[in-house]
Length: 291
Image (tube, rainbow, N blue to C red; front, side, top):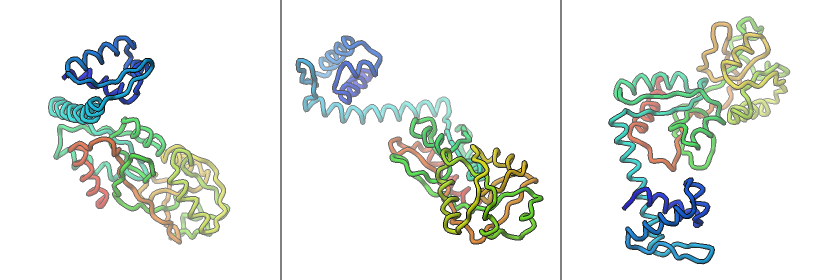
């Protein structure tokens, strides 16, 4: 069986229209029609019922479409395995640095010792960029705050606490801990509500629960941008307790303490997880307990 013809047949079976399928496959309609006729002749099965302006699958065609897709999935998996064993594999990971940086550093150090042939590629992303890249197949894993999205499975790694970040010479920096009321009317620097919706929801919920009327002095696209804003004395920020913001920034506990956020690893359900990715997830889980 010609696998290229099988792939093209499945495209036709999905579209149920030769013209639409031809456009997606970048073929001419006559060329695709001839190819389907050759495919039927080679297999000896009648796959289509052809009308004047439409086509539909026969029972044989439905069987070939269903089992043919399973066959192609198996071929693709074996081909990917061949490529990994010959060329080495790469795990593509998008992550939120403020939440996952230390954990990833530990996981990668452990993983590369056990799997030296596998490369790890990292991308520092916003939540929006992570989820879009995961859906498009750009990333194998994303590590950050759980973001509900169809077709994505999450594995919890650890709970992360919120603290208040401020300039080291800020009056509140002398306190052992900060009470929620200390933030009333304070200028706040927050991660972008568009790029980090989970973070924004958690912070907003805490402020509402505590009756805090703070002023948003700026929204930022990254933790490094927030650090610059704090050092420039633009305001205070809510960040993860493990955030690394330099010597000019102090991190203070907040009372009452905000609910922790769940840091997790997400992957697409529609894609079979490769053994090396499963192995990396196992290291991430260990790192989540140690980092």
